[in-house]
Image (tube, rainbow, N blue to C red):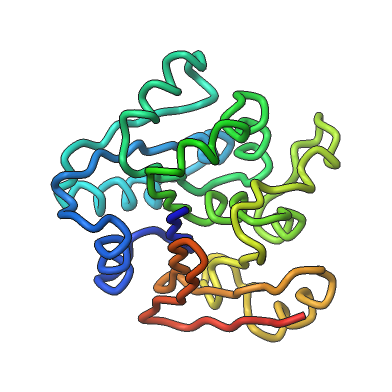
Length: 219
């Protein structure tokens, strides 16, 4: 399984190089499925989503398709994901994203899809890849009309948790002192990563790639 778990997407050349290494072929030969579902619940300015799409465009991928799993029937979104080389799971509300991973059925077929695709997570898209999303309330409010217990489990693609946006001005509580205290609540190791850091997973190999700041809190 190949994953690139980021805080803010493909923000620098070090992270792009990690994607190159995972792909094993030029980016202009890759088709990207951009999944914006987590952003649907976020109001206000979407410049962060636009920035992510703009960066993808600048990298000259062969194709960038936008596939909202909450807006399309399964027979449509599944075919389009199967045709992609990269699944780019955008940020936003983690609970909303996990809800639709489960409701749509994508969570069940994702392991099969990832046998020959790369998963890129951004913020919420990264958190849902971990065993538990209980840390998501740090950045996103749960859905009030749905039993929150549904959202305890993530996709379990990795055996650690991730706190994105370390030291971000948009998330002032996301600093090492607070995260050190929070990490003691969790039963998994946790990586705190800033917006210039990603975690690259290639099979059993795990590597932090960064032009910024990160820290791993061991259990």
